[in-house]
Amino acid sequence: MTLGSEPPEILQHRLFYQGRRFSYEVNRLRIPNGAVGEWECIRHPGGALIIPVTSDGKLVLVRQYRFAIQGRTLEFPAGTIDNNENPADTVKREIEEETGYRAHKWRKLGQFILAPGYSDEIIYSFLAEDLEKLEKPPAQDEDEDIEVVLMTPQELEQAILDGEPVDSKSISSLLLAKPFLKN
Image (tube, rainbow, N blue to C red; front, side):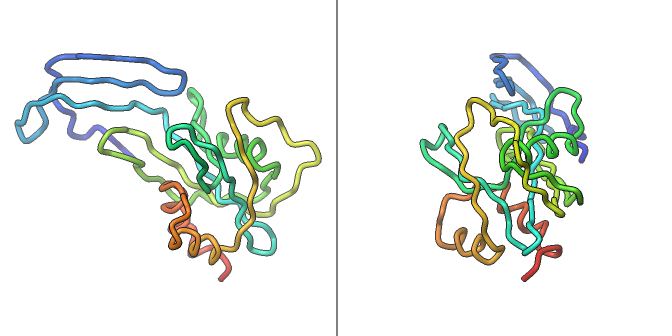
């Protein structure tokens, strides 16, 4: 996915902050239609998401505490792409850290822009099959509070329809995976 085919004219850099995982900037811009204004943007290295599927067709999800919403969401395991890392390597690391499983069969499902109104983050989605439960999974990141949850695709769809907090990257990736999931 190529971003940046219509860059705005930067009239003034107003604010820049570099955090641990991403940066935040505020710029005065002229956008392609000629309008001038201030825009805020989160610059993100991208993320990679895994839809792990067990041999009996269940999806492996995580219920994870998210400080920004002060609660837990149901989501597929995912992680931020490290510097110069291939998304395929990110998912192999994250599935083990977050779920305790290793996948032996991978399929790239696609990619999408997560929140183009304020961020340039791209999510790369993968299907993971032929799972092996690890005897000694790697330690989770210190800042992660995660519970592994197994659900059928139908149970997940019902949870979404019932209003259970499910993050948007998981909902979008579920749509990409539907042709490959057992009904």
